Length: 537
Image (cartoon, rainbow, N blue to C red; front, top):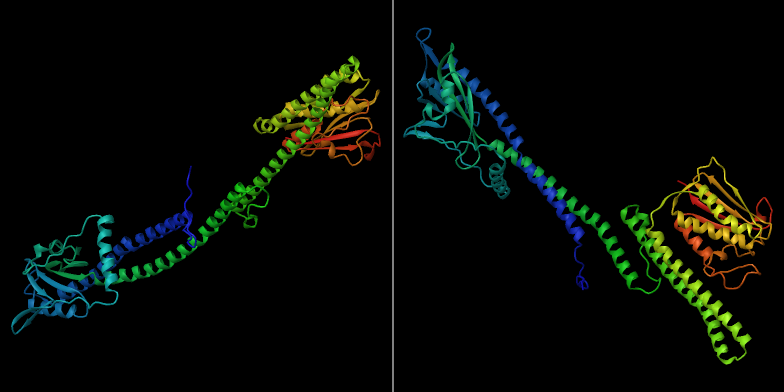
């Protein structure tokens, strides 16, 4: 036996639907946020822009050095004046956040903007990192994330920048390219963290390369720009995550709670024994849950109707069987006490009639009880109503002529009288109606079978010239075990299920069956009219 999860009073567990929707939405937003936080393309764009600006500075500074810090004894014998070049390098980069180093054409270092000459010798300037701020933790977190992201998504790792005590041109590949006459740049990874950007331009005089100017700059500005963008993204991410969570809870609640109400209502209906429990009506929602609610309500009503019908059918069967059984018991008891052979013979005839009536009742009841299952399992196919009625007339004409009754078929040849259904059961309907018409028609009477197509409906009629239907009984004749037979007919020869079964078959085909007296129509003739309307294909 399956066990249901225990429910704790006062504590409402989170619905699995809500948990799944929340998990999916939060995961989607987090993946989007992580992807945006990396900003690999944006970072590359900042590096390219910074290198371009640094390259422009290097070209300007190199041009200034080539004009103002060189001397020549003769054309082709130009050379750098180291003292002047050193002063110019210091002055040119004073207003910038860059470091400039000037290398001679032989690769030796001429000037370094971070080296000052003092009384005690050379002094190297080193910029200290900025003091920690309130956002230091966030910055450390983002830097750590950046390193991990670069390991996962970046391509080749950058070379680490190395600072030597006495640097020379061969220590830097871009300086060697500049001494060869080509400007060059490079991007390094700082020893601790961050980037080092390097741009080198040749110092020339009359196309003669006299040295190489190397400008370097750390990636502090790039990191600050990335941090600002990432902070903005984190703010948007936080807002988006909050909105997503709230919307997920709202949407999941509008799905999960109605479903739980439907489940609880269905459980109450299942355990109930009467019609007091119903399915909630969510039809005003206009969505799939509303459709589900309507379907469950219709299904519940259909089940209750079917149960009521079964209960009524059982009561009717018990009542109808009880009558012949009572007659049979009375006849048997009387026959045991009667010695008159003539009376015994009459009692035996009564017993035989009651047995036949019981047999007929049981057969018709069995057929009626199997009808629902058969109608639900049978495959529907196109049925030509005109041909079916013509065949039925041919089969019944002999029985009608024996009672001096004429059958008349009124079917147009050009009408498309095709319905989708079970031909054997539709034949049963019209055979019952035709048999009733024959039993009520007087000698010399005419029974007319008509069929017409009315837009999307095929309408068939059977008209007789009998006494008609008792007033007010037009609907009651389709009830189970209702019997209204001609006066001269032997009692008990009909079970009263024929018209009820016919209505059941027509209803299963989505059609309509009705009865009325002919005199209420235009023809004004006496008799009954049975109308069957079926959806046309």
